[in-house]
Length: 621
Image (cartoon, rainbow, N blue to C red):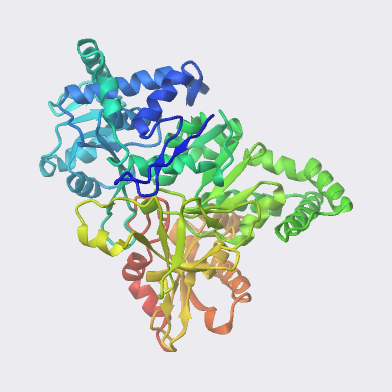
């Protein structure tokens, strides 16, 4: 596939040059080009009645076109915002590409958001249309309908349970498609004209930040931002033409949007839509993807599952695993140090892989992976090394919504503990305060309706990331923490809590953790246990418990977590160790206020909500 990058240094809107993929400079142009070029080839699959069923590029294009023209028939104007409130399903892509093709702006809403959050985002984005997945998501709109006067119509993808529902504001997706097809017959060239009219500097999508420090902000990303990322995608991500992928993270997150919606416009990769987040382990084994990107929590769960299974294995199985993973570690360490393993070690690794490691990779569904990516949150370097010991080429990438995804990535020379080197045409520098700053064609247009926040975030063209770190003498970027998360103890010691938290999350019994200690005499920690693994641990010891809270309160579980914390404490200086801890006695999900939709604990919110529990740890004995 030919990628062309054409310079246009005199273009006022393109100071870095003009960017094109397959000769196309906007998402709609590239999408329609691929629809025509790929035609009968498979675009994606979804599982229906136990069978993976394919959708061709021609079918993908026809449904997206009907969606876009249906919206035009309902009154969509260029620049109007269309919101999508749904899980990761093919209809999300039809609405996405249909909206952009018709000149609209797509905005995703997390399916776990509450009605109150939906109200806020619909009003802040001034959405004119809303797609909802089903009756459950429709109810969120119905709860706030009087507070969202800008909406002209709500379209429902799945009408199950709504057959007798009648509302002038609501229509089915099938009705919209029929309306779009009828519009096309009357205006046969309108779709192509609208696509041709799209321009690189125009707003393409809104991506609302996860709101870890306040209300979500709508980041405005242009077509040029997206196309630039596609041009440089193979800098760190191997492009596997028509390779298999698994789509399961929320499509309103910039990472999943990139891998499932945008990268296939260059690579022709086939997205396989997981049935649900709960079936991901089963679906990944069925798909055996070539490219797999996941947030650290997913990679931690995979590791935890293997770790627990090994504890239950026979002594022969445990011994075989320890030998095999130990051999893998030696190979991984040699290559991380830039050395090629000796012949004897290579032979031992070949045996380890044939007898043990390949079975583990197949059990995880990762035996065909060419690129295993992790990002969107910090990850333990030890966890990356474990995957590399298995023979999985795991690499950490770094970026954020405000730079449309990728900013740095790992080249062939891997440096654990860093997020790699700057992507092409990306400048990285460190501010006097230690903040990582980025500049490049991927820097976003700003925050919708928030000029002051935009001015604070983009200064003289430099994106202020909010991350603290440094660049080493080889150009590798090391992130130490978020600026707002740095702890200054009562003794004046600066502590970056994420390193301790990441090491603790390497434990199969810990789901997440928040280190506390700002203006305090010592560090403490709030811990969220991994319920499945801890519950099994308790059951194996015949420890009685009735629910999540009672499990957290048992003496055995308290001792287990204390032991895990002490293991990590040994890796830190005395002033950086955890002296006391408490367990969060509530099983949190993405629908709880304490966590973001990508399952990161909100440090500020947690510190406020659990203040009595925290203060209890600092009461003088």
